[in-house]
Length: 344
Image 1 (cartoon, rainbow, N blue to C red):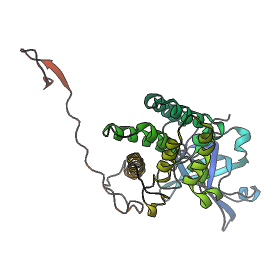
Image 2 (image 1 turned 135 degrees about the horizontal axis):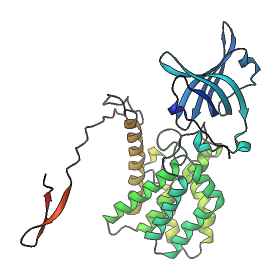
Image 3 (image 1 turned 30 degrees about the vertical axis):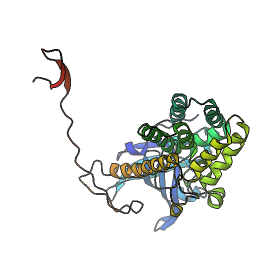
Image 4 (image 1 turned 90 degrees about the horizontal axis):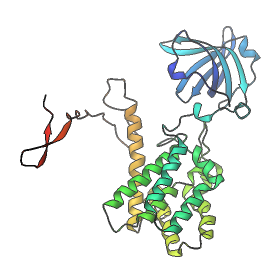
């Protein structure tokens, strides 16, 4: 496996660089000195504009977005922005070199393998009914499903749109469902957990992932809800010990998790568990979007984001309540305990 040593976010003017990148954009243009390549290089930390000037540009084969390259050159500035002047460039085969996609594409801050393990911990903690436990683990242990889940994005562009995003969203929805269920004793938390784990399974086939991360033919023609049920069907058929009534409920939970017909839901929620899953899914998608946009204000003096089309509003970075001083339990003379502030 070939290691990447430098990342775009750490570049400063004057650096000499030689490393691997993915091409986000590539255009051949003309200048007074001849044709040149106008490139946008990307790794997981960000993007940088790059130029390949003539005559080197004329000796480089056709370039296009999505290609992996090894580039060498220097970092300078142009109009107050960093720019990479490329002095050597080779197109490379990322599979042959063993390049890690997570080094070049946006990815979750949490390792996907760790998130899968956390989902298994939830199964162990909450699933006391062995047929549910066996069914869920059989699906997650399937190599064809596991490989897809580890690399899958949670959406095309709106929320969790990065490697590991699907697992990050899935794990968060699972935790929300368990938390909400704790407040309502009548909820079948084992059924809702099974549905939470697999509600967006089809997205691993609906979206291509990678740099483009566009809808696949299967995704456009069928959609992730249908694809997910299709992938689960063989496992449900083999799990003879799981009653048909529970299988039916699981399918309803997945089919109705978008909530309303206008949001692409084939069915509307008709059980308490279906409502729990729908609202947990909705709140996690919204909060991921909100935090991602507010994070862009970090390091600036701005309090408002640009208008967010998906949320149909501007977002405000509110002042955070100061952290209170530490407190400790102190025993009073009568033997009772109360919280008292630490003495200065």
